[in-house]
Amino acid sequence: MGVQISPDSTTGKMLRRWDTPKTRLVDPDALPGDPFYNVYGERPDGKEEYPRMLYRAIPHPRTGKTESYQGPPDAFFYPTQPEYDRAVQETEQFNKRVTLVVKDESQFRRAYTDGWRCSVTEALEQAEQEARHIGNLAAERAYTDQRMSARAQAEMAAAEAETHEHLPTLPAPKKRPYRRTVTPKAPAATE
Image (cartoon, one colour):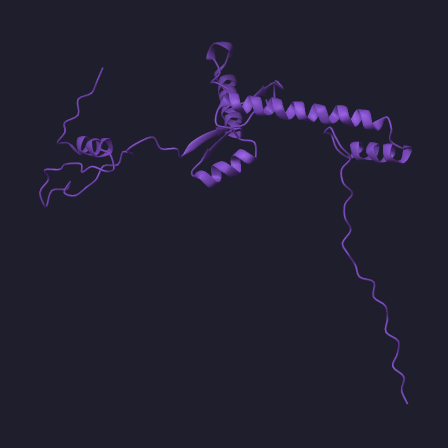
């Protein structure tokens, strides 16, 4: 059922202001002293790009399936209200981790290079592409491991023992800070 709003009410005046484009006057016939005298609208003239929502696909902590957005849970599958509330909170937390709102072009470019995408399908394709790239690196590493020396294999085993993640390549050794060797000066001859 629709609601009728009087155009002379405060709500009606504000709606008229927000429905008028930014390049037009809200009331072109307003006289000096009228609250809408020389007041422009608030609605954008065309499509505004920002703020914009971006997505990233990550493995779901409970199922392990790579997802980019999760819909609301169905209350029918939860026997008690606390279980349903917990499922809603888990869904909201997951959706906060996989969505990002950018406010301008520079934030968009930075987020895009970090792996965020404009749609859910693009985010899933990006995650699949990254997984395929890691798989290719792992296959290349398995091939090169066959020809590595025993010392290099021991270094790789030590590096794998330090982390729980898959290492497609041997991490670069940590660089030690440069230290200049100081030679003591010879004592000055005294006469």
